[in-house]
Length: 311
Image (tube, helix red, strand yellow):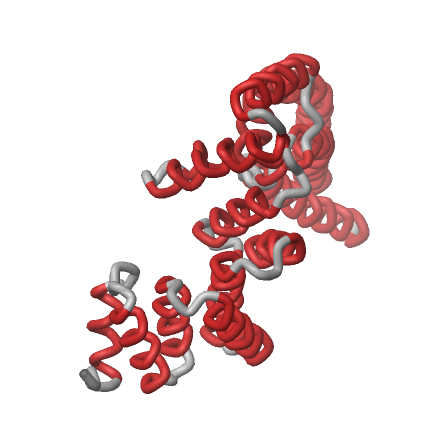
């Protein structure tokens, strides 16, 4: 067999294998709910079909080129054509399946992502939102008062360990009053609980920009900066900016409200991460003076292994 034909066969086989591997990654990508809104699913599905088709047909053609017997070569070529033709209805079926399941997925994402995930409401959702706003205003008097009341429901759901319900309430508060600080505060805390520290800092910063004298919001922003700093340091990165920002914000929170215990207990954790054990104990003792209800016993035990309790 001429070497040129072998080369073409090998190249087709390699490209086909790479295309199949890429197709597998595409499937995994579309199944990740945090990345897979309707547009991404449709794009990936449309791309998946031709890529997978090229991968399989490329391998079959490559194998066919390596066959010495003409009948075997023809068989491989026929198989490649069959695969190419079959890929069209398969792609249509996959698209149809995604589109059937998309409305429910989008409805869930819209409710459980901050600011409804940036997804425009359907006509049905628009009507429901309008009805909710009218009902909330009738109950609480105006949009601002209604937003505050609904945000309180969001905090209550968070305390009960119901993050989806909490996010839904903060979204409703945002719908009522997008210029208020409470929704962004709630979004920021929930995102921080989910480990999305960049998103948490973004939302909490918006809340602070609206109300820059609230010690509780500022303290939560400080904590998210400190947690992001620890995450960077644990990965071998430079955490100095986040740690400095956290320290500045904690100082501001303490100055605004010296009786806000949680700011001291959270500051103790961030000082612990930085190896500042004396400062951590100072924060712990101040939190104790205020009741000590926000101090985690497991954290105190960890701190004792680094430095003795000065009490």
